Each structure stands twice: as structure tokens, then as C-alpha cells.
Length: 313
Image 1: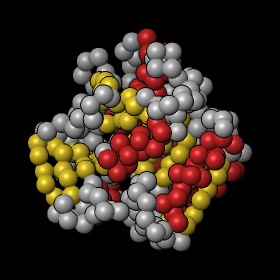
Image 2: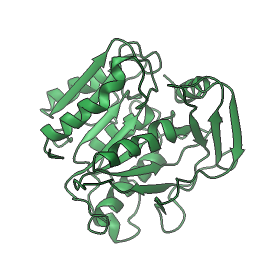
Image 3: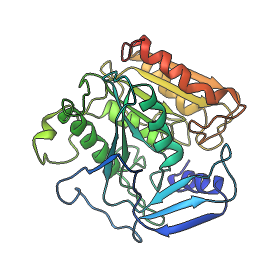
Image 4: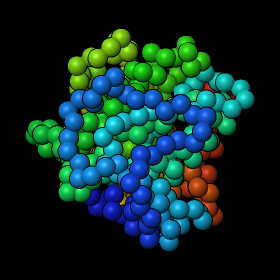
């Protein structure tokens, strides 16, 4: 599905909206840091200032959805673990079709879960444009749509986390990624394109590796074309990190084939992978609990993290 359609679907799920021209800020006590010491590389135009939009009509699990558009100054917010520190860290990529970011549904609420399990959460507010601007990469021979600035931000964040690992009490060998929808595609991209230099080094942090140690794409998109071909920008190899996949068979935004095709590619490359498919759940459910079994996926993810020795009991 086209990027704009995915973003509009998520906005529609929020029903009526209240928009305010402002920069999204984390809750008090959490450190928000800029990714770049100066201007971000390859800056693209956007139609206006960063805007935060809150849904007020249709709710997801009884709550509205906060969306951010026109992000030109990417940041990462570090959420320290509560109680025991496992040493593990997860960089979280909210979804939104590379046009918006669902900063609560697929961001802060994820950090609440991870930190409660002793895992440092790094929430990435990566660059996204807004209609009519769509960033594309001329990725021959298929010309898949994707956001190169978003992947630049993801690579930079992974390197910064490892650069600050000692300061933030993180094991640099236990840094993973988790993303939803378009953010799930960003998970697959950085899992397979971590060696691809998309920007010139700007400081000592860029000497660090951008490879995730584990990856969790949740209802990912953009992995399969409308004709069913696997996205050739995602170059799976044996070095691709262990992966945990979740998707609903009735996902009418991206479709369950996204996870199926990625799972097959990972298996073919002998990458450890675990996939959970559910009959019902749709798209963009995040971690919000409902009567549907799919919303219990975080418990399964916790078990998986133990099986790959990222966390211990």
C-alpha cells in the first residue's frame, strides 16, 4: 500500500482530531537529545512546522492517538529502566507511513512496557514529511518508495546508543530495535542495511556499529510490492539479527503477506526467527489491551528475549 494511504488510515482511526502547532515533548524526567550536532543531512522541505495531532473521536482501546507530522529535527528520548537494569536496550520506531509518527500508541506506551521489564527504551522521533511531500529513493531496478532520511536517523541513533552505552548502563551487545508498520519496515531496513553508509561521519559516535543485536517488526509494511515481490532494498543475509514478527491475518492496511515473505527470506538465510500470526487484530493496535488475543504479544516477546539470551529471569 502507498505511504500516504497508510498514514491516512492511521489518522482516520483516530477520528476527529485536535491539532496544535508545537514540537512533541516527552514527559518530565526523560532526556530528549538531538541526533545531529548541526543540521541533519539531506534536509528536505516540509509543508509547515512540526504539528502534534490528538484523536478525539474514535478511540483505540479507549484512548486517543497522538500523531506528529513535519518532523525535521529528529530526536531520541532515553527512558531508563525501572527497578532492575537488565543491560538490554531497545530503539523504538513509531509507525505512520513515513508521513506521521504515532508517538504514544507506538512510542511512549512501548517505553512504559520495556522499562517496566528492566530494559532501556530509546524512542526515536525520526524525520517524516507530510502530504504532498513524500521522500523517495531511486533504488533501481524496482524504485521502491522509502524514506532515506528516516534510515539515516535510525543508523545514527544505533551508533549513539552504543557510544553512550557505559554512561547509560547499557550492554552494547544487547541493543535491539522494535517498530510498527512503517517503523517495522525501518526495523527490517536497519537489520539488513546497517553497513550501508547513508551519511558522512560527523563525530566519534559514527565509528560505532549500527547493527541491531535483535529485531522486532510488528505489523510491518513496505516489505512487499503490490504485485507480491519482496522489497529488494531489504537484503537479508546470515548476519541479519534474530527477528520476532507479529501480524494479524485481517490486517487490511499492509496485509499479512508482509510478515510471511520476510519470514521466508529470514529462514532461507538461516536467521533465527519467530513469527506469530493471529486471525484478528487489524492494524495499528500497538500494546493496548483489548479482548483480542493478539494484544498479548508483548508477553510472547518477553519469552523470546529470554530464549535469545538478551534478558535473564
